[in-house]
Image (cartoon, rainbow, N blue to C red; front, side, top):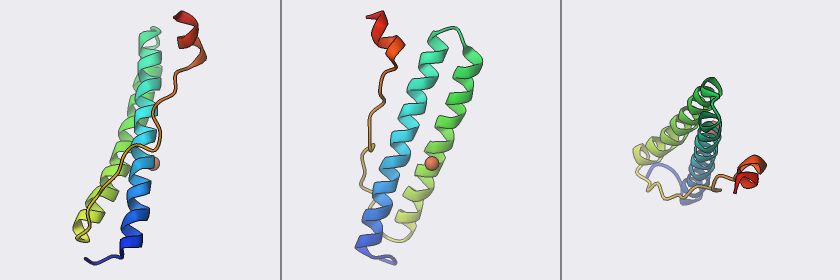
Length: 87
Ligand SMILES: [Fe+2]
């Protein structure tokens, strides 16, 4: 392996952060898309894909270095206050 275990662990943590951001943006896009604001939904979908790209760059870096990408999203999407009011 071309990088240390400590470096792999740090990058794996960042992969989780990137995927956590990805999921949050997907949730925001769904919220606006569901609220008849398709342009805002589209904007946040683009943001989501950008975060996914960041994550995949780190995944591929770890793989290229001979490491094992092991991660989970650092957070799950939170629901907005308006979404809670509808229930
Ligand atoms: Fe990012």
